[in-house]
Image (cartoon, helix red, strand yellow):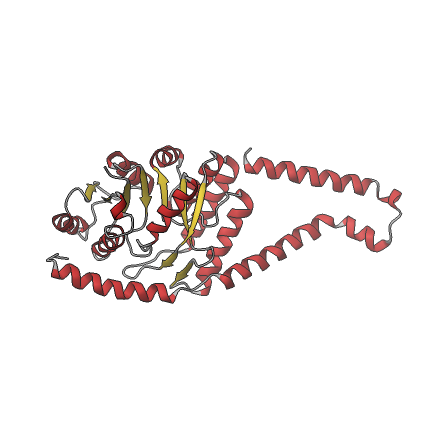
Length: 92
Length: 242
């Protein structure tokens, strides 16, 4: 299935659950804290998704390895290659 | 018989190309596989480089032979996708390896690609900078954040089943590459991403190996505002179409 459609179905389903909860809010007999929680549920959802995402991106940026050893190896091999190619008579 | 065809699309790579070819010969020409009958060819698709890359290809052909080094000139600078299609017409190998000719991809990893492919008969083996022992060199913090952020958004929206989507160091089964490349229409960074996303949707198996990416030793590396915008629109197109 096309990914946008998957997201749409997921979004509509979650929205449906939330709206149902809102409509039946009185029958739950909740404290005022719990009522606020449910009232702004999508907002909390978006906020925590954003925060978790920032955390993941920060972690992945921090753990993206620098590889100076690869650059060093390459620099040495470039020298070696140039010398060898020159010896073999390559014009470049 | 040729088992592996290495496709090198070039545009102004006169400096780098001989070095890439030399490294390819060093690692593949004299590898553990050389004795077990694995052979390869290097196919250079040059888009009429003003720096006369083709002259240096002809020199390389004199040195290594026209069997080993195949030159496919094109009239002008055309897209990467059509470069692969052009290269595929002449590729004799059952497997095709694509890589950049600017030394950011080290040929030594091709041995890992081959090993990995044989492990589970993978349709595609993708080189990844983002798995353990992979890495990058020459990237500042900003570049790293953009790269990881762009990758994260794509992972969340597309769930493509591979860690490095925009890399261009990969091994494909020949017929798999042929089918994929014809269905991919994106340009630039998104092209490589589209290839893997469509591979995922078509049910092809993708293996990954760690690679290090050393940003261009010679020449300019490109990542500007334009690239970011075209990445975002390309990503959205894939989001609503795959």
